[in-house]
Length: 390
Image 1 (cartoon, rainbow, N blue to C red):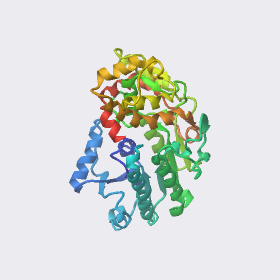
Image 2: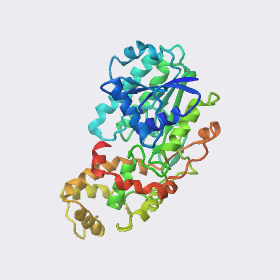
Image 3: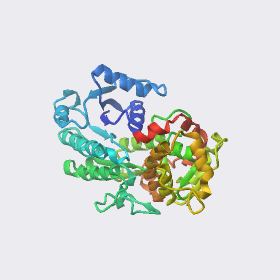
Image 4: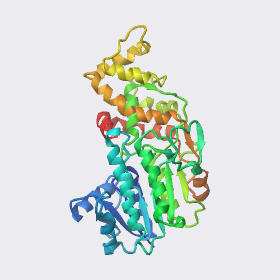
């Protein structure tokens, strides 16, 4: 019977991991690092995670640990907590995933310092068998383009990163072996996690927000045929759990990804949701360079005439102005959306042969297939709130 400690349970992936792990018979206890004002408040926050889809919340099995990942005293507090003395498995899922530069300092503090605090505690556990670090496949960097990326290509300290998030996740991976022996380390690197393949409300609209925004704009400054590696949250969680519970794993690092077989493209994804929004203009894919003109237009610093790159698409500009009061709202969307488009344009597919070899999970459902069923959920997304949050 395993005694687990997990971080990030109020997040998209962490919440799914917690609920699914709680159903496993060979898991005795799950201690959850969670921010809360009190133990009772922590229970309320955990119950909310289970209530979303009507899952049973076993308070004898799932136990809140009220602490803060970025607390400089965290490792000492965990060491001095007798309830945690028998922990044998840690899943570190917590991360700040923001792409916005204004949050770079927070991203570093959570993803690097927080990981260090956890490792300082983990190395003292006498029964520790496994420390699972939930990273990201995108740590390979922005110079790796239009290819199938293997696990062994990362971490690469020379990699150039589009956003601070991927850099910090690379640093987090590099820290692991400074604190723990290799045989106690499992690194799982999900690709792009978007939505849920089941027909219900996903735990978070992270990434799905970008699709909702593009659905509103309908003018996509990117390549419709660029390869994109997208998986659903339920596939990501089931894959990770199977690896964590599989003591006969052959590797220490795994991509949790669609691989070539189940990868998708922007054209296929936008096509999958089109029927949910019959009244909107057709999706139009244009040159990536047009984003610069769109941003200038949103700041009223470019004229739309026959010499303008946007002249051909003025029907879309009129459509935007009819939806929103002023250009400033569009400016927020353009700037928030840009890093997502940058990732899409890289054309990266992450090799999933290790995952398929060491689990029974099978290929993921392609995003353009499950979105035909679940795509309507993006109607619930407030794209302006998302632009600020993500």
